[in-house]
View 1 (cartoon, rainbow, N blue to C red):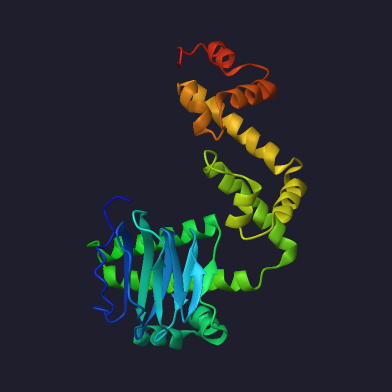
View 2 (spheres, rainbow, N blue to C red):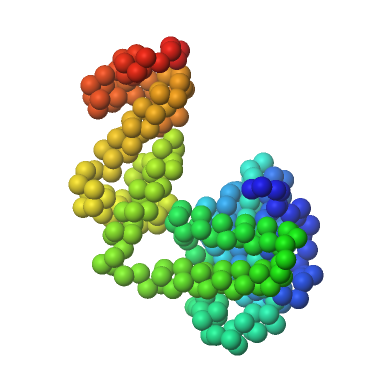
Length: 292
């Protein structure tokens, strides 16, 4: 972010604005917040922390990309399992009056909360790409609210309305997923996630948990679309990226870990099998200085 947009958390449970408020919180030492409710709508987006969230007596363990929709009058609270972990989240408050006014323009604005009230399901789980888009919209809204540009208030209103429609679309797609198209969508999202997390755990167990689907389904979808196994693809992407790392002069002692290999020996063997050269031979072929 260009500027600090986080808010100091003070446990305020009332709105200062008559329309909407948005917060980005980062806390290390929170260990208790009393159960509470309020007369406005809350949309909560979880980024990090060791937290389970209780809404209307229903407890949901949270992971990156989860969001909660909490209607007015519904009791809720976070349950902390440990402190010292950065508890980060976005919170959007929308007053009942403002929400009703935009819903009077179009019932489409009310889709998600209508579903929540009817089904009493408050917890939703997105994938990495979707949540990145959500996060970008919320950061844009925060920058608009805390900026000093012309027509600021009107533009912030339009951003909130656009955000609600986008959220409703996400909720709708989640509830009406079309099986015929879902395989290709999952494949594209897997590729994007892998490319952005080459230095992290990309095991089938981890991916199945993140994308909220089975290991078998992930393996099947990926092989059908790519023609090689998921494991082979990950190794190839890591090795290709490691070539760029070598060309950038990253020492071998750091390189293998940066690109997701557990030790140098396994990196060396995979690199030579893929390219016919050892990492050192590749570097010398490109006439780079010694990286050790």
